[in-house]
Length: 114
Image (cartoon, rainbow, N blue to C red):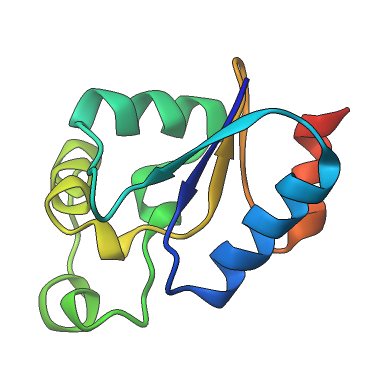
């Protein structure tokens, strides 16, 4: 079953959610700001995305600008920061059993629906 990590106040996340609804495929919604991920859950998603934690960072967020910009961190440090500050995470992320994609643009979701 698919899972979407969703932020209802984000236009791109709402578009991804709508795309999933229109697909007719079953999925669950995780509002990750209300129900933050654990470090292990985030690490699992990173494996499915085949990305480093730095690729998840929303560089336009104030927290990023004030605390992370221009600094180097180990992957495990970034995972902790994202879990503690979930607004830092790109959204939406759509996860299947073996793979995950960013839902922006929504056409990326097709990769999981095949």
